[in-house]
Length: 41
Length: 283
Image (cartoon, rainbow over all chains, first blue to last red; front, top):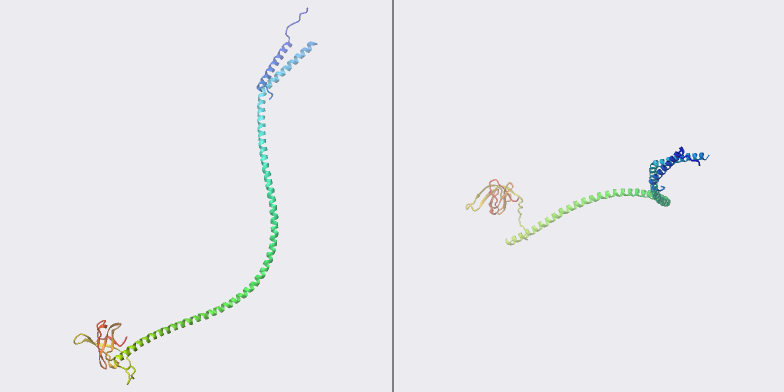
């Protein structure tokens, strides 16, 4: 039975960074919509 | 092979995630300025709309006013045209009247010439009449002067007539008195006069030689320088005066040819008699 390697690679880090960037983008988006009262104009 | 695709998708996911984050951050960062700008634009648009509505209302009012003015001006123009037509008609009538007036004037001028000639003739007649009036006036003045002189003469004669009437009345009274005197003295006034009639004494003047009282001192006797040669007779009354002063009257008692003696009538005395006083039969 072959044992798979579980060591994080650079791509795992990049996935983590991208997830953080998405979260931060969502936070900015929510804050922006909050300042407009969740309306379009 | 799968590994390569997975790696590529991971890189793409990273890129898109970063782009999304940057876009969201940028939007969050600049949205306030954009919002202020949008609100300012919205206010400006509102103001512009308000200004536009005001201007449109003002334009409508102005349009209404201009239409009213236009209508009024059109009415005025109509009235003016009517007045012009009326004035044109009046002008035609006035011209016709002017022509008639000119004809009338020419006629009046001709009449005036005739009237002037007639007036000139009247003036000539008036001048002649005035000269005749002056002649008649002179004759009238002469007649008035003659009438006045005749009236004066008439008045003088009337005065003489009155005086003669008065004298006649005096004479009649004197005749009556003399008749009475003749009747008292038993003299017939119808008896004819025999012998010369002594002349009547008109006026005889003399002077007082002396005066003295009588023996009883009851009367004053005066000797004067005129006597029977001068026509002085007994019982004549003479007047004694000195200058312009009346003194008294005397009654002759004794008469001599060149002198006479008289007695002072005390009732007529107005002063004392002195030598040299004048004596006269009448003043």
